[in-house]
Image (cartoon, rainbow over all chains, first blue to last red; front, top):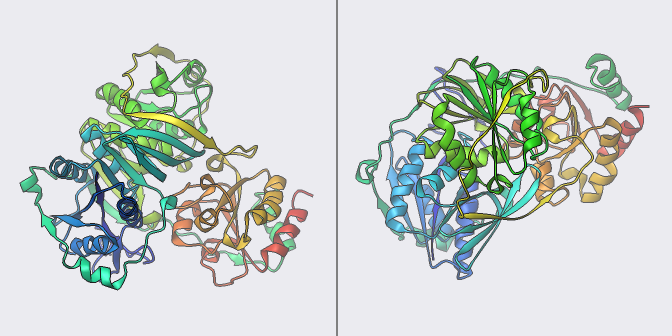
Length: 250
Length: 312
């Protein structure tokens, strides 16, 4: 069975972002970038399924600038077999990304697609279900446990009330939540080996996908700032403030 | 044109998030239809019909909707979507699961997690864990929208008298099957609807720490219990307690952060709370930057003291 995973290059989750002074977006030049954390979990899960002998081949796909190839190398250093890069000058929107991925999946025919539940830049949480829709495949979002057997995948999902388990017919799309696994660090020999692994490239034109956006970004602004608070000396002072100043307890 | 709001419910009654979503829908100033898709969901449909400002209720009643499987929900929503200019759903794990699928079936984009309605096609939404706010204009004919319910006031649950129209099921895809669920049972208020939240971090040290330190204070304040990702990862409390960018987003009147350092990802989930209290032994913890009232010290000493002092 072949597994396809997707990765996105985003601003590292530890970096405090800066909004461009003209409000046109968030500054990404000279900012530390990294693989979207949920995608790391997707990569790890695919590699583990191969190590367990469930998967026979693993492929990773990324859309984006030339630097996206670094993220693909990271995935291959973690153990993915080969990579596909779709070069883009500007960022595509979720539906466009899903259309591109659907075309690649037509060629690759994986039995399972694993992707992050959301990218931590746009926080949209859309691409997985959109891809499943375009393919007509079932979906298991927010997965904290994945088990493949007998042409089916059993997915335990983190939902608002607790956990929910679904059984999906393969092929299927699964999106990862935080507690699915703990991604490994790539060892140096594997980083060296990953440099020799192949990266194929397809442009959106070659794939026949129109990426014209339908949601226009008008501006990006700072969120409302909280006014800074105070430190209180002890519990009595805290209770007094909560009762008499903030009036949130009686 | 008309707006469709997809109700979140348990077949018997509506979840509060539905009323907040209707609050967002009301800002569009169009007639509002509510879709109740469920199994033996007569009571939920009736509850929707009494909501103030609802023009019509559609009820799709079928076993296919018993567990709100994304495949079946999306097919139904996509089938009725062409009758509406806007389709809104709460940005809960249910809405976030089936809504993008429905949008893609209609060839439309989705605008996720809106926090403001500027006009019929322009919305505000948080990006980068709420550290930036994007204003976006949607060009698609049908706007598929998920709503951050904590920022919109709920509409009154009563005062309306809408007609209920039964609609056909769009059937079962046969692609996915519900196996089971383990839902946290709690007598406490729901995290996303609570007026007061007591939230604990890894500094609690254990599941027992939550029981002995957090629970008594929450009991005293009739509060919901939340947690940081670190506390959930460590297994102190179940996943559905997690507050943050990737967990639940909350905005209670009072949020008490205990032993939580205040990672960006956690702040994203609670910084819209009206009043924030932080209790932490590290005076430099980032949580103090958003806290209205900070108390530096040992939580194992301070919190029991606080529990004793409140409500007495």
